[in-house]
Length: 460
Image 1: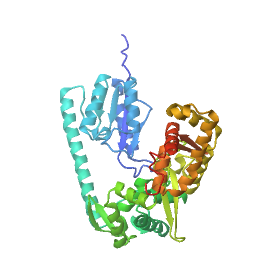
Image 2: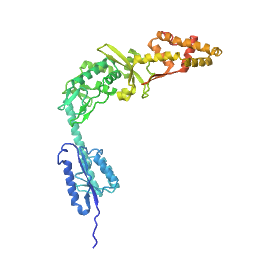
Image 3: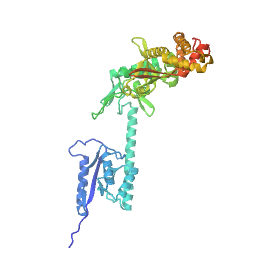
Image 4: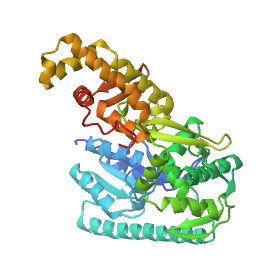
C-alpha cells in the first residue's frame, strides 16, 4: 500500500486587543487568543494544518482601522504566498468594519487563502460562509458604532460639567489628577501675549519677541510617560491662544461654552479688548501698524540665505517704554527660528547700511561712467559733449541726492528708493543692493532738466 501524503497547510494566527490595559501581564488577552487558536490548529493536524511560528499580535489597536502593524505584515505575507489559512479567535479580532473586511476577503480570495474563526464556525470559500460572515460583521460594526456613540455622549456630558477630557494641555496649565492646574510661569506668558496684542495689534511682533526669548509651545508628558517636547511657536499658535476660551475658565464643546472646573488666567475685559482687535480684518490691522511705524525698505528686502522676503516687524518693551523695529525673514516667522540663519535684522542698522551703500555707489567711477554713457544716448545735447563733461554733470546730479534725501519725509524717501532699487539682499556676508540702472539714468536726466521729480520736496 502506498503511504498517503497530507499536504502541509500553513496557518497564520492573528490576535488583537483594542486597549493596552493588561498587556504588561505575564499572560494577557493576546496570549489567551493565541493559545486557543493553536489548540484548534493542532486539532486539525490530520488535515495538514500547521501553525506558523511568526506571530501577528496587535496590542492597543482598534478594529475599526487597517492601520495596524501586525495586520500589515499579515497581508504582506499573504501577498507573498506564505500563508494558506488565517486563524482568529473571533471575527471582530480581524476587523470591526464591514468595508475593511470586504477588502481583506478580496485579497484572501485572490491568493486562495481561507479565513477561519474558531468560535464562529464558517468557511469563507462557501456562499453560506460568506452570508454568516457578513451578518457577523454587520453586528460587529453596529457594536463599534454604539460604543462610539456612548463615548461621545459621555464626553459631551463631562464637558458640560467643565471637566478636562485629555489631550495636549493648553499653555498656562498642567494636568494633575485629570484636572487643569494653573502653571504660574506659563500663565504669566499667556497674559503677556494678550496684553502685547492689545497694545501692538500685531501677532508678528509678538512672535518675533517670543522666538528671541526662546519660548516654545507647551511641553508635556502623557499619562503613560511619553514626553512631548515644545516646538517653536508660530503665528497660528498665537492665534489659537487668543481664541482659546479655556483661559476664561470655560470648557468648550462643539462651539458651546460651559463653566470649567479650572481657574481663569485672562480677565473678561482683557479678553474683550483682544477680540475687538481680532474682529477687524488682518489686512486692516497690518495697515494700521504700518501707518504707526512706516518701514522705509518694506517690499525691497530679501533674505540672501533662504530666498524669502523680509517683512517689517516691531516690538515694544513696556519696562523701558521703547519700541524697536526689525526686518524679519518670513520663513523663520512661519517655520521657527531654526528655519533660517538670518532670522532678523534691526531696522535702523539695515536702513543706515542701505543709505550708506547708495551714497557710496553714486560716487563710484564705474556707475558715473555708465550713467553718462546712457545719458548721451538719451539726450542729443550731451551726445556731442566730451566724456569728462558728461561725467562731471552726472557726478554733480548724484551729489544732490544727499541734500534731496534730507528734505524728504519717510513716505517720499521710500518712493524714491522704490524708483532706484530693484531689491536688497541681506546675507551673513553683508548687504547687497541691486540698482535699477535705467531708472537711475532717467532720474539724473530729470534732475538735470528740473522736471518729472515727484520727490524733490516734502510736499510732493
